[in-house]
Image (tube, rainbow, N blue to C red; front, side, top):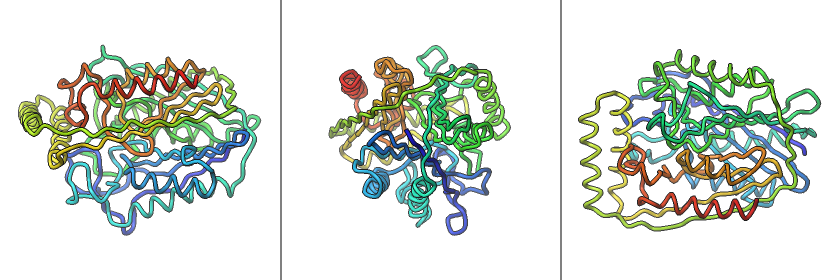
Amino acid sequence: MQISSSRTRITPEGPFFPCYLLGHAIRTEKALGVADDLWASALVLKVEETTLIWVSVDLAGLSKRESDRLRRELANRYSDAKEAVTISFTHTHSGPEYDSVSPFFGTEKAAVPGYMDFVHAQTLKAVEKCFENGFEEVQAYACTLQIEGCYGNRNGKDKPADKSLTTIEFRSGERIVGGILHFTCHPTVLGPQNLFVSGDLAGTLARSLQQRWGVYPLVMQGAAGDMSNRLYRQGNDFHELQRINDAIMAQWDAQKERTPLTLSPVTMRTGRFQRTFRKDPQKQKALLAEVEKRIAEAKTFDEKKVYTSSLAVLRLQSEEEETDFDLEYTLYKMNDLFILTIPAELFSRFGLEMKQAMSAVCPIIWGYSNYSVGYLVDREEYGRSFESAAGSIPVGTTEQIVAEILDAVRALR
């Protein structure tokens, strides 16, 4: 197996700054500055006759339109299959708006014109640099541990939570030439009071690994729909961000075991779950009233913050009579490594179930991949948590999607 990795800066600057930051509807001001750079990180793997192109960008999201455009262009340039290309995002809530229509504010406070063309060009350049720099023969080694005291299910410490963190090192001899960071948590330590561009927790952890490895890792977010550090944080500023980062890295540093992985042959399977859901105007009206009530009665700023975001999404959704739901996923079976890419904020209990079904040395649920259909919420949480209020699909739909994916996993396994 051969790999090459590279990255390019996508920090909004020059004509793209100041900009609005996406992530919190309660935050309405433009950014004041840049705390740390944002990146488009690329990892290209050549395994026998298969070329895989994996990219992660430090943004809150990507539109399906932009993702499809990038994937088609990269597939045409370097690969023969669009499925071999994944464009994911780290989901920082301190990055710039990425679309001409904001998910919270519509066209009122959207992306700076031209910024996404810049991101598109920089993403292509990151991948191009991988091919220009050349490839090295490598051996992959995985490290997996359970992170304690830093993050968990944000709707209750007693609820299902995937606290695993996995790193994969690609070594040429003793030298690390590429890497992957996979963890399952909203990377949102910084709150809506923050007005500085930042990669937040994903970016901070990636820089910490870069200090140890000498290379910047590709970040793969997990099934983080209901995962965050909300019940563990002691603040929401940069001091708290560093504290959480240091606590996680201390646990990673203490884990010395590395497991060699065999990553060939590569098998890819794609699937699609597509439905049109007609909305009930009365239910929509009642839900809007319920969310407005929760904001008015909020006892904490965090509670007010999340329901304000839900309300903004609901108001935009209420303008449409129906929802066209289209979820495309890909399975990569690479002997010891089994990856599901899914364009959603999947609840963690489903991620745990899928990883168990994979029965692999290194199972990974790669959420926030290519685009996002929003939250995929557990039936039992409908009406209880803000994620279901911000969703656009009927109760029970997540279970249908998961059942189909589990069948595909078992068939491939």
